[in-house]
Length: 264
View 1 (cartoon, rainbow, N blue to C red):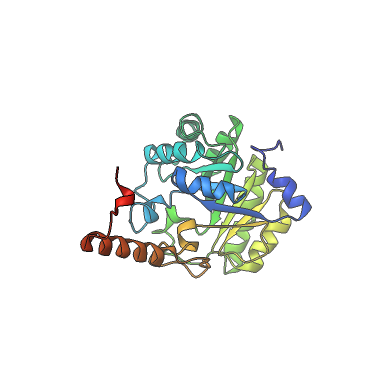
View 2: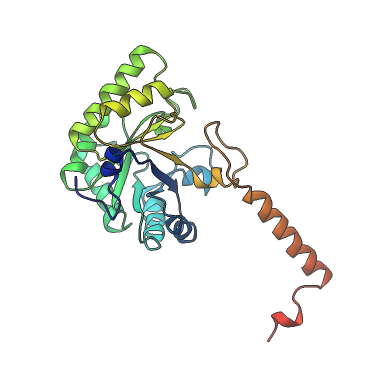
């Protein structure tokens, strides 16, 4: 597979080098992630939870994804930018899938799209790959199917589920996907799927056996009130922001800010 915007993920898998992916929805954060040499920046439909405060991703629209993808893409010079195709933007048929993916690339300026996939949606994935748009597939727990799956539950615990996920992973590689996200599956299953595939896997709640890891950036920075079990918090910027705002409020109330040095 050709190199993607300076980051050859398949080459990294072959060399045994881990892949790092984080989310961004705006230019400010995207620029910081890019400067930190993250391999992949995902403009995720997790924007529904993190940015809009919803309880799921189901209300996110393609127009929203195009808008935020464009903001992120314009700030990035190194990382591969992948845009999520949101719920009901590719579920009706292959022509809708091609058109939606095309908008994210043409208007949102992403280099690849991510699609949450069940066996039913394989033709849509293949159709997008066939028109030259790189696809990162997403299996295991898929937030678009949260109601069908009965909530946020680990997938692939029993042998039948595990076999279905393994078969789906192989089929997604066969139709042309360049990478695979595995969310909330047992670590042993994720390791087995990773060994089966020549394309890289990125885990989120799927153990250390994947070729790389992805987290929602706001979760790992401590900017969200609650984070999943699989998230490690590397900072507590939420508390830091509160302290800074409280200090600003106190100085304004007391008349200490602005000082003479802040005027003209």
